[in-house]
Length: 432
Ligand SMILES: *Cc1c(COP(=O)(O)O)cnc(C)c1O
Image: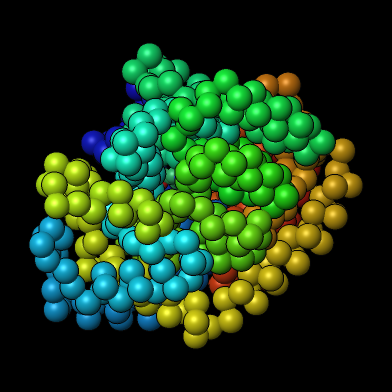
């Protein structure tokens, strides 16, 4: 055991070897401010860390954006939490309208929950329920290899099978996984999809995917054309399309939603992370009118059976509304474009390094793989990289040997340069 003192069990942390958690006292813009010393913390010693991964992909406009702070403070004093069955409130009504307006024509209804995982669980239950309710039961789900949709059993089942979930695999339901469409090897993915479609005529309920960018699977990208091809193949058999935009949503890939780039309106869309600008937890599953109607019935037993206590929480919805207003009132897409441009030129420079491979960029995401013998999530190089970045006050948390940047949109050019520079320094000093 290390001399770890806190009783808190942190996520994705091996406490026997992990250093003590960094104690954050406040956050603003692209920065996290850590306590200088462990005992009490002298504000004078405060350490400023650049949050180059948006605190695990959630922060959109920056930490503690004043408009969101104000909206949440106002809502907190007005109405905290309300049962969401049989009751409603302004923040949720307003947000549902806003979401319907920005997500394209096919999506007409919004089911609120409290996280990305629940947004996905709800989508899966709606998809399976849709076929059952319409009298043509379909039971199978298709998913991409290496996907990540959450850590509950349903979402683990549709996610890529990997080291983190090995122990629980016997408890997961069966899913038809198809190869990830690697650039240049897309036909392997299409062939596998076609084979499954041929063999399972009329038994596939839905295809779930992270559009254009797989996050936890290693920041892997594929083109809008590839997405469109897969979607069209599924559509030919009326298979429901579930776009998990939990990470890609709200600007990460360069557009508000990644699906836009493929001109695709899915039947179900899952949102969370950036939905509130990253300020508070909230999930949303948007669905088509056909799906809503399949459950719309005088027969009570046909209702959609799902609830979580804090669904549609007024504070979370108020944060989301404020975040959506920032999208309208501030030049957010321009900021995103600036970051994308900056990333593209940094990618050019980094590509000259012989210790890097697979440098890839999509919108505000820039990723690269360090050439090592042991790649993958448990790569020995990961903790070294992580610690080295932190020692330069840059929060980058590589996925195994994949280093990636996913900054909040307020990140300045100066800070972006610091981040790129920290990668160069780290690779020069620490790894080699
Ligand atoms: C993070 C993530 C989830 C799970 O969201 P949580 O809020 O962590 O439950 C689901 N899908 C994708 C694509 C994600 O990146």
